[in-house]
Structure formats: structure tokens, C-alpha cells
Length: 247
Figure 1 (tube, one colour):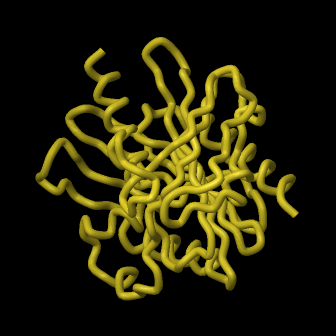
Figure 2: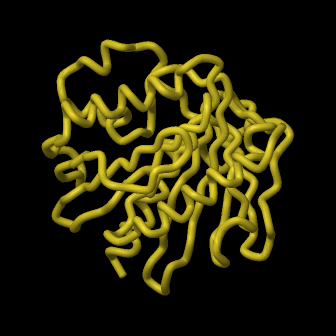
């Protein structure tokens, strides 16, 4: 039970890092706040708010994966404020392999600047003591930023496959690799990201799929080993949803 509580806490905290969560009383107009629309277990799709915080795109949010595209039991919560990417800070890619590189190594941030972004939190009650949590982030670019972001991520993982414990909190060692995975879209990358500590091993894997000038990114959020089967399933559903919506 303790492991389950810790697992849920870590997963929720990780989701906030991706979608710039604020306090429950934060206004969506605040730069650091997030207001989310929560889809119920019986709804076919979550409501898409018309307006939101900085970086929010209602048009792109409508193309996020919907519950109707996922197995029964999944819920989708659309975020209305997104965390910023790294921009053109190319020096970050060439920096030493330190914990400051964690956001880039884990694909929570990517190099480049999207023209529009949308994000959602995904959750699935896989069992009485097993909750799978993930996120989907859509990024569109006006140039070849999607291709460059994937190229930079591959190079960074190749150079910094391991980060040692930071000595702070409960974090252990961090391992990154490009793992085998399905070939999706115009290009795809399965990022294997595991954390090993006294509490055991957690997976934070991500699937990045490029379709034209758009990146579809689905990320697991501190789940127990074996959750990869949901990651691939959700990534394929998210890609199909994006490809079959919009103009």
C-alpha cells in the first residue's frame, strides 16, 4: 500500500512538471496556473475549454486522444497551460551530463519553440493496486523544429545515457536509451527512461512520433515496470486521433 501511495504521488508530481500545474485555486489566466477539464469515466471525450493559460491552443487540444479512442477505464484531463520548451538554447545540448539536463533527457522539454501546444493527463486503473498514469503533448512547428527536436534528443541520449543519484530526496540513478519500438508516422522514437532507487524501479518511458511538422509525445509517469504495453497502445491511438482530425 505504501508503494502504491508513493507511486501515485510521484506520478501526479511528474504530470505537473509537464503541464505546468498550479494550485486548485489558481486562475487559468495566471502564467503559472493550470485549469483542467476532467473527463468522467463514462464520457466519450473530455470537454475542450475555449480559452486557457499561456501556450494553450483550443484548436490543437481538440485533436488530443479522446476516451472513445482508448480502452474502457481510461480518463483524459485536458490542460490549459503548458510548460515551455527549451527554445534555441543549443548550448544545453552540448553541456555536461548533469542533473540540469534531466528535462531534456527525459523529453519533458525539447529543443526548439513550437508554434502551438496542447497537453492532457491520461490515467488508467489497471488493477486495485495498479494505476497507470501518462501524458500526451502535441507540438506543432512552423519550420523543421519537429525533426530537429528528435535529432537533438537522440544525440543527447547517446552522450548522456546515465545520471548518478543527485543526493537529494528519494531519487536514485537515472538511465536513458533509445529502445526498440513500432515505426510510427514519418519518424518515431521510443525513449526508455528508468529510475532505480531504494523504492525500486519506476518507468518514465516516452514515445515520440513525428508526423510532418507535428510531434505527438506520449509519456509514462513513474509507473511500475511492464506499463510499456499501455504506452504503445496510447501512442498509436493518439497518432490516429491526430491524423483523422483537423483540416
